[in-house]
Image (cartoon, rainbow, N blue to C red; front, side, top):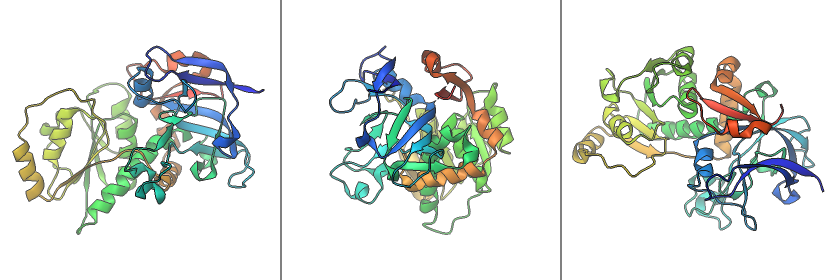
Length: 351
């Protein structure tokens, strides 16, 4: 029996991260398309799973293969959807088996009953293994020119959905946005800023870091970088994409948005902190200024396709600059150990 290397954890158990050298070859039931893994992106979700905060192993096993940000090369596809050698990423979330009304029409990102599954997170093996399989409808082909940066597709799909919903909400009335504020200059924030610049908007990015790569990455987009509290900004943004999840920032941007402004909350707060805040004043501002605040997470197939188009249009060198470290699989513990100036760390299966 052939085996593969796989990065696995025992969900709910701290210090259980392992590189398994004899993991089974991906089962044919996982999908018709067989893929050779090239790179796996690492994000905060992975760190939280490793810390034992959440994560569910597939039925019948106590180990979960990590990795939901994927990039691979097709080895075989008997369905003809893709060709051997094509670049491909696997969609993370799968619809629930019931299914709910949203999952039934391909909107699994909006699942209503929580019975969805997710590669590398919830009840589906992840992509951090030498080979993986995927069903054709969950396989997203990529421009061959994205071989070095295509691993950014999953986080880009998240912000592609955010922008899709921002624009849908905006068109409730005459809408001519000019100014965007992105809070947080991690991968999600920087990619949100990229998609804003692709829309021809004036982009401002706010983050705590005053040194390191973030200010330069923002400047390279033609955007403006700020390292001040939200309330010190001298403008009211038409759109805010909040990517920090920091409670104070979340509340401040709700109050800072311009009349008819839209605030998209894309960062997940950890909870457990109480803040003294004038909720009545916030309610008054939101109502009288016709503002909208909404949350956004995950993405469906349409957003993944939009993300692939956005990456294909983006400057390759700028995208490459988001990847701060590429770590060989054999040194996996270093990949999952955060460093101060990390933007996006990639586990390199092609090394």
